[in-house]
Image (cartoon, rainbow, N blue to C red; front, top):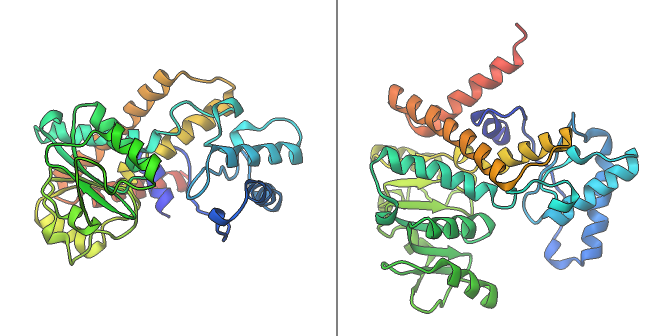
Length: 324
């Protein structure tokens, strides 16, 4: 359901589903993961395809896994079927920009929100909770665009520096040590403390329900960009709305990934592959239009951005489902 609304709010013609295999990939060899990936396709190939169900990467999967899956599908069906799955490596019919798409989409809608509130990037203090692919990428993009990233965290802890962090050096530190904690030139604090630090923008980019009724009153951000799925609990959402915090909901904020998956599917269907610049321009157009529609609906009706996004998405699904 969540994926259905996400696709609908950015107006791309996909439905939604989630599927996976119960396993611990951290304890498996690459050969075991490859055999598992291929076995998954062998079990489900009748239900997969460019016009049926088009898988995309999620937790503990990557472009290599997608490459194994499309190769297995091609072996079973015969021929080449690049549009049967997305998130593939560039050399295996993937799309440029897919790896950074979730973070880039988040950056695009955040930038639009900053403009609406009359804020300036160089004077905007940002905290990113979660430093995986999406979190570290959006922190890097924001740093490069002139935003002041003052705090980041991962599962082991958080770092904070009111004067700003050099995100490229933080990424190097995490690659070398396995965590952002103990980064030179920053204070090491807890994830909970980080969420309650004063900032202009808070970006939860890790787990569900990190902002609850217990800590929502202590959140001091003006804008929250939900790069993770469901990082704000329902009761906390009401508290933040009453505090006039602008929450950019997950089904809009992190839809960049599925948007570029759609672009990849289109490229696979047509055999025409786009430059990074073309992908970026298309993503900017799609995300900006979606943000504007949600923002204006919320303003006109005096409702949350989340409610506005859901109402737009549900109506689009109804309109698509009803036979005229």
